[in-house]
Image (tube, rainbow over all chains, first blue to last red):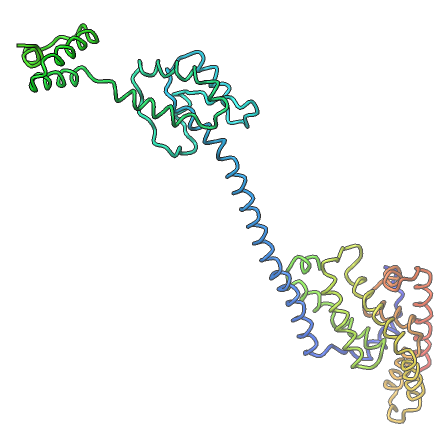
Length: 217
Length: 169
């Protein structure tokens, strides 16, 4: 800075005194400066809150919109199918969490049923017997065209699977049923049931005790 | 100022403490009337507070501060120009003939004060900005909206007149 000062002039000027602003003026100005800052802060808080709320609502709406898609993905694997079917592997590949522009039907897969990100509303069906699963696979294959247009075919198929499962009777249960028929004197029915039993389970060896219960005396 | 702009109230207090005395004297010696000076002084700081959001460090804060003060003084002179002329004449006429100021020092001071009061406002402003605010010629030019030649000329004229008043003793 080029200093144009003259020492004599500067000294004379300093001798004029060094007046200061009154204390009340200082206080008023400093108070105004603090008020300005607090005004700014009081304006910030509601705006920040409003922005947060808008963000939360937007995210919630977005999540709700995506839910049906995810449910479709997570429910589909509940349809019973054998583990190593080649068709299943192929369909599994098609079933990625990507948005489905091709609206492929949900591919039943025991493998993909394991990690379920969103809990399905219906209770999970128990693992069905192998033979039943096989027939279900065929049924599922037959229904695949209809399923392509359906948003959630899984519940109906699950009900069917449960009904079929309940029809399957263990050998022991069948023998108990035959013994009960004998007890009730329904000899003909018992004979038919025993014949059916021997046809279904040809290798089943009856104990002497059981023989006494189920065979005609 | 940037810290204050970002919400640090303490930063304003630091700035205010640093500049309050010099700016107050700059304003007081520009308008002479204490009440008016206080009003203008407060108004300068209110403008600083209001303008904090727009503040960009393109120049020294001091230059910016004195620019605001200069603009307010210019407005003030425009409104009260006639009154100022009367006050100038009163001071100018009364000072040399005051019998109470018999001591040499007081006479010298009185002559100097009279000479300062007698300066045209822009020359007085240039002198006060230089002496109180520590502004360079370039900064005085920026604060008053003049070119550097004009600012330099005003300051030189002011210094010559004041020096003459001091030397006359």
